[in-house]
Image (cartoon, rainbow, N blue to C red):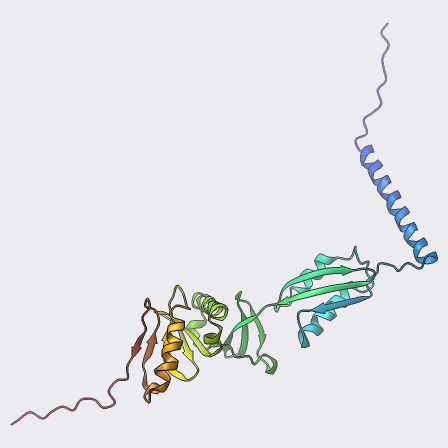
Length: 264
């Protein structure tokens, strides 16, 4: 008669239970060691007691500080919810990025990268700042009165033209800062971006592909010739779209030609 062998039932959960038990024991031992160190050796607890923020100032610094204090103070330095802090901070439109650094035993350091305004957007509801990545920021106030061009033309504020103007303004700011700082207005036309410069009433037609094209040549022309012309206010346009050439729209005749009477 054959003997039947009894096999133990498989328990697939047993390895996981062992891992969990080991982890619990290690965590308990670590916590106990920390408590003993805090009580008898004078070691400080790794609890966030101070949050320092750099990269912003004024009202924005106050906003960031309030968020960080609410989410971080009193939390473990290495186990607080950093992702929640980042997400909440970036709900502020002016925050572009956030760098988090832990400074034991009790300090959390945050470096905020602000979005940089590149244009003013003039609408019936007010004037707003627009960043170089297309985000409409705060309403303009006295603190934000920086010399950047405004987009006031309603047709230029539509989606596609506005994107093109943001690209043009960003390129000018990064590559031709002196010219950009003197701009008062930008518009979009069938020819591409149109700039208006302080001290020159005539529109300046910029290249659709490269807004910085011929800018150095124009600055030399303006300094040496255009600014000295007595009829500068009557120039019709300045066109920088051509390769190594600048077209200037000369003033039209002030008086229309007189019609001569026909002999009888």
